[in-house]
Length: 91
Image 1: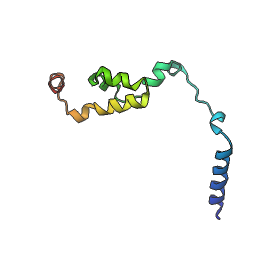
Image 2: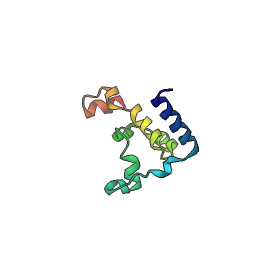
Image 3: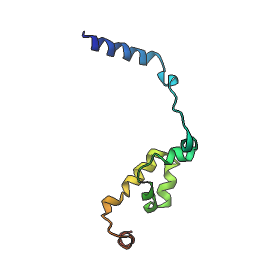
Image 4: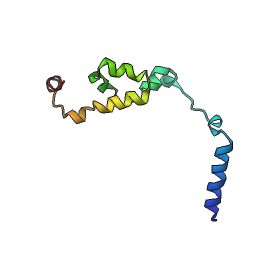
């Protein structure tokens, strides 16, 4: 085994034996200290949720990953919107 292979094996063994997630902590400061800002601030294209139905949003139960999927589904670039009036026509 090469030195790199040995290190990989040692790390894999250590990851199985120890929960290293307890060694690290993400510090939230400023706006990120607010739970709502932390969750929704990480979603790209949040404004696209305006196109989603109420049922779609309720089904997410606040899960940011599911909310991101809905935001991606209604991404304005896919609609090729030219103006506000054009967007209303597409809806």
